[in-house]
Length: 368
Image (cartoon, rainbow, N blue to C red; front, side):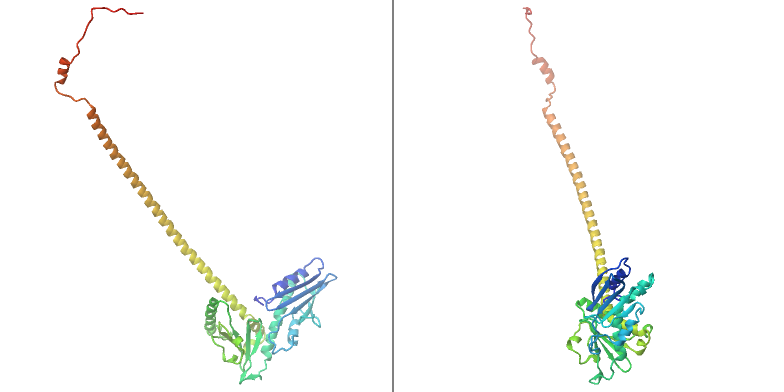
């Protein structure tokens, strides 16, 4: 499963819709999920209290489980899922490994119904984890290859196989890591190194020790070259008997199955965090540049304003100078146009240049 939840969200929604329907529903629905998983849900309006769920899921290893049918251990684990409401149908529907008859009339009402349907929706996770549990408990320790215990290849996804190697005192799980982007390789490598440092501390002494190496570990000698060709190195976990005892076995198996998904989730979140920080930093730098440009524009406008004021003052002063010069020129012209005064000329003018007065002895009569 691509998500960390054991229950399939899509299958859960379909079963809840079928269970909560007010009227009986006819249903023949197919669901497809990550890892070549297929669900087939069938219900009939004539039989509203029963529904059929068929499941097809690839086996983790064809070396250990030669048949496509589920083992007795896996069937017993499935029977433990809501045994009152779930019944295994024999034989399974053609093309599927398991067919379940769901008894809706035996599912308790209220909030407990959601809990039971959630457990039924997690049946595929139960199948996968039970297969891995069986392998961890029943690995043939007598099969060796060149003096070493032969690793078992587990294929949860065609591009994400991992190996389980049983040794006298521990079980080693090896994960070849492959990434599409070079940036993902850098982030994942830093994460693996941090995981080794944290795992070696006293606070995490009870957790399975983790090691990372850019080259294949010695336990994988003799495996196919395509299985050992990676760009992210190899991550190994040493699982001791205390990690597979009692209830810890289920948690350990589920953690191993979801290790690839967890690493991809961490890489994706880290890349998103880095991109958000870079975007935020870029926005702050752009804001600084915008502020600086606005201040520069204000300064330029102030300079232009100051230059304009200086120009106006200069023009006013020039106009005053021109006006003053024009006034001086006009006064000079007026002086030139004034009559020239000569001392004594007035008396000479009155005496010698006066026109004589004539008087006539004849009278004139006014004509009407």
